[in-house]
Every structure is written in C-alpha cells, then in structure tokens.
Length: 318
Ligand code: UDP
Ligand code: MG
Image (cartoon, rainbow, N blue to C red; front, side):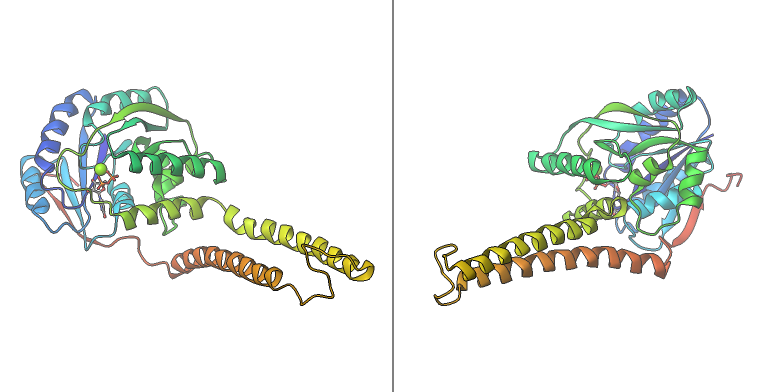
C-alpha cells in the first residue's frame, strides 16, 4: 500500500481540485493508495469538504490536529499515521502536482528508499526565489550533513525511512527535509517544475518561513557557535599585536595613527574598540540564545502536535 500525506491549513479553495486530480492519478500508482489529510487547525470549510471525501472513499482519512501546529508538525503527524510501504508527502495547494507521483513511485520500485523532488523552476516572486536559492546554498555550505539543494518536502519514502523519522529521530524542532537526509539509505532526486499555488493565499507567513530557515540552520550545524571561537581568536590576536605596537611606540616615542603617547589618549581607538567588541559579543550571545532556546524546547519534551480525532469512512478496515 502507498500512503499519501497532505497537510491542510485553510485550503478550502484548492481541496476540490486537489481531490479530483488525486483520484485520477491513483490508478497509475500501481498499488492501493490511502490518502491522509492532516488538518492543521483549519478554520475555514476545509474540514467539511474533507468529510465529504471521506464519505466517498474508505481510503481517505483525516488526522485532525487540536490547533495549528505548523507545516512540519503536520507532516510529522501524517508520518505517524501512515501505514503504507511507501509514503508520499505533498503540499495541499497543488504546487506539487499529483501527476508526478507515478514517476516518483517508479523510482521507489527500482529500489530507492527516498525519492525527493528538486525544483527546477519556481513560479514565485523574484525576491522569494532569491531568498530560497540563497538559503539552500547557505545551508548546503554550513550543514554537517549533505542536504540536497532546492529539495523541499515533496517526496516518496520507503517504510524503513519513515520508521527512522518516526522512532529514531524524536526531536521536537523538526526540519523534515533535513531529517530525511540525515536518515540516509539510497536517495535520489527527481527534477520537477514547481507550479503556482492553485488558489487561495499562501499559508506560510514570513514569520513561519524565517522560523523554518532558522530551524534548518541551527538544527544541522554548530558552525555559528564555532564562529565565536574563530572571531575571538582573531580579535585577541589583533589586539595583542596592536598592544605590542602601542608599547613600542611608547618606548621609542613615535606616533601611531597620528597620535603619540604624549597626546591626549586616543578617543577614536577606544570608542571603535568598545563598539566593535560590544557588537560582536551581542551577536554571539544571540547565537548562544538560539541554541539554548532549542535545547530548552527539546528538554521540555512537549508533544510535537496533539491529535483531536482521526476521521475515517465507516467501511475503513483499521
Ligand atoms: N500548511 C500547514 N500549516 C501551516 C502552514 C501551511 O499545514 O501552518 C500547509 C498548507 O496548507 C500547504 C502546505 O503546508 O498544504 C504549504 O503551505 P504554503 O503553500 O502556504 O507554503 P509554500 O511552501 O508554498 O510557501
Ligand atoms: Mg504552497
């Protein structure tokens, strides 16, 4: 069996279209398919629409979260509820075309454990495209593991990778595409054209996007912490050299940067030094804060999401 996980947050406008396209592609998927919609606390008509789908098919179910927990948590909830030998993840706004599924599943049948989608083209504003491109390249540069460029959550995964994500990687702060890379096994990327959102507004607010980016970076590298050490060593070394210079100037009585030791002590040097060091210290305190905040979240061990109810067709077997 194949499970298809779709996180839904106020997607009433796209759901009917999504349903039609999914239903027409399922015959080409080669196996029985279950569709798991994860309702991430929608407040529009999404739930009613999904209930109509459930009435029509015993292979559709909705995992209703108790409130909005965010995209990554919704995906994680879907992964826990998926029973398929292969599990697909896709967005609910048709940016990830369901028609690509058979091609992805084909690769899975060839023996790949993870088939992830690589975006060739984004139908979004140039600023957003630039930000995405820059983010993935930066993450690739600094992360401890190899995370493929321009690959989002759209993918097909084998049961054993899903098992790893569900059971071996219990962390709260979830950057699913990074965890997926971390899991390893035989992975491959397939190129696809990312379409425009079929209808409705973007549900990822700027704040949520920034959070996702920070989770990706701070979750997969310690480099920002190590930067404090490098910068500290560099500044200490330069200060030592400068100190030596001032000392020799005092002894042999020549002037440095236009001031000799006889003049009024250099205000500029002091001021620049204080501000510069103050800035550096604040930046690194911020970085410490980011990591400590994440440690705090992890030790609290709060659930990633809370399921309100699982809604399924009365003919459904399990
Ligand atoms: N989504 C969600 N919870 C959220 C935000 C988004 O489940 O808090 C879902 C949304 O319904 C959609 C997918 O995540 O199916 C991607 O969201 P969106 O298209 O708004 O973001 P994009 O990645 O296209 O910027
Ligand atoms: Mg989208």
